[in-house]
Amino acid sequence: MKYEISNRMSDLQGSAIREIFKYAADPEVISLAGGNPAPELFPNEELSKIAERVLREQPVLALQYGITEGYPVLREAVKARLAAKENIGREGDDLIIVSGGQQGIELATKVLVNEGDAVVIEEPSFIGATNAFRSYGAELLGVPVEEDGMNIDALEKVLSEHENVKMIYTIPTFQNPMGVTMSVEKRHRLYETAKRHGVLILEDNPYGELAFDGVKTPTIKSFDEDGIVMYSGSFSKILAPGLRLGFFCAPKEIVQKVVVAKQCADVHTAMLPQILAAEFLKEYDIDALIVRMRANYAHKCATMLSAMEQYFPKDVSFTRPGGGLFIWCELGHGLDTLALSKEAVKEKVVFVPGNTFMADISKPCSALRLNYSTMTDERIVEGIRRLGIVFEKALAAK
Image (cartoon, rainbow, N blue to C red):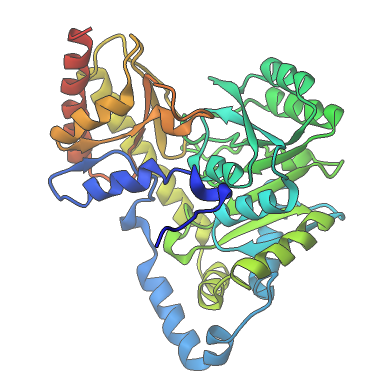
């Protein structure tokens, strides 16, 4: 039988990162490709104790259906934490617990974007979000990212030239894939530009708590007095990604429709993970856990940067993030990192080629993304050494 795939999905490509994971399963392969948090930081014992108690004392609550908006105890805890830590939550806002930050992005797109609408993205940007936009027939309009975030002059030009822009998607803090952080000045300019053009902002902030120095940059949502910013957050990078817990805060009218959209998807986020997170926030010090994460990632990032300085060709440029999980490298010279990724596999090391993060993924790209969070120091250094060999050969052949 011949199967006809819907127009929505027929041209959509799977995540190159997920494809790379197939190679990463080989123990001899050093993976610098993923975006996983360090497994040694998972609070296994604490969550195990909570799970045992909850399943013994509250089995019906944990195993029965819940409400779509989320477990009330967790919802209130997240609202309180956002208000205290990020100054997020106005009278006109509401919040829903979602199955990972990715679901918040997808549901917002489902609710707001019609086929043929445009979404402005940072270029490069997170493939999970860009694929969500593509799946609803959105036109992607890329705006370059500089060392201090999105080029706001270029954004102004894009918005002036396109009347069908529905929203602007940004990861302003330790951006995926570049690792850069948008300046406070640019955040205010972005907000005012969107307001002037009547366009919503979708602020994605999974890495904001992971500043190496512990200093937070104000979120765009924190100065939203006009109800134009939607905020997607996650427990994946500060607790554990396998719990699949995120939260979406936006104006009430939008959240009400997101609730309906979620009922069409998975009815509600799984109850047991929600209870685990709520009890962890109540019984343990998540901020102390985050401090350990910051120190771990700061060390691994410094280890990778030092190895890159030693082993990479001298004209390869790269970002120097102050937090998060990623470093962005630019090889230049017209090299295609998609082709180079296949050469790297031969050397038993993998990375994510830059075209994956672009509005037009078919165009060759000379940049790539590296991740330092999951490997040991020794494997980070060895992986970078192997990549250096691949890059040297490619440049010598030019």
